[in-house]
Image 1: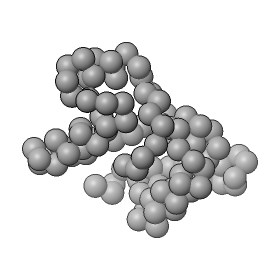
Image 2 (image 1 turned 90 degrees about the horizontal axis):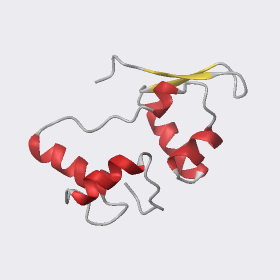
Image 3 (image 1 turned 180 degrees about the horizontal axis):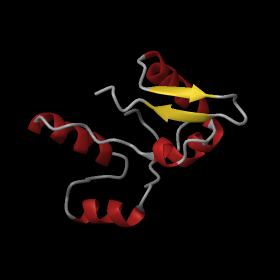
Image 4 (image 1 turned 45 degrees about the vertical axis):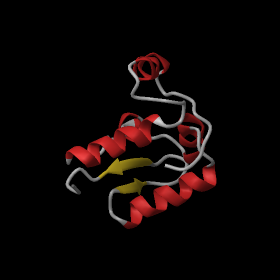
Length: 103
């Protein structure tokens, strides 16, 4: 939720939201979706990249989501401290586990 280069994960879906008026400019869509979820009392969206690729490295994840590695490390550290994710195994051959019981 900070300024960043906007690279849609799925350009086709991004174009649908843009043309429907849910996104005014590139890079604002996720924030607007989160704001609307909060206004409706709904859960915030979940991002499933780590779930579908548990062995992804921080460098690969940084490239895939389009944020700086240093920023990603800060976010991942906060998630680890909160008990939401855990790295199992070493840096080279380990994998990420998401705590589903944390809601």
